[in-house]
Length: 167
Image (cartoon, rainbow, N blue to C red; front, side, top):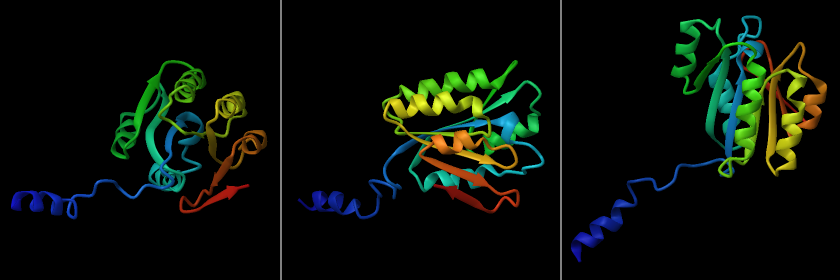
């Protein structure tokens, strides 16, 4: 009986569940060539913190073209994201990855970090399939149509420490 008491008291020391925001699972795709530019000087750690306000990031992929440096790839890995290096246009690969997330029953929210209006059909398809949508972008060039179509739009500021949610 005494050993049972020890086991039950162990629950006090081992967290059975982390504190999770909203309990929703998020799949985040980052359009690397469009967003990871020197003029934006964006920080993926900031993006991770912003996303955590909406739920738990379960998938975090950064799509890159074949010109991505080893240093950039290493930085992406060190920040907990999965780099995907593709030959040619990253938009097609990002669309394929997004469709996989849309049809993944374990993902509740589709988040796209891009400024590109080409991803408007992805946002609409995600919503048709009952997924919440978030778009994260930066100015200049953050598509108004993309922002208005998503459930949540977040504009990252160039100073790298601020984000503004657009309703």
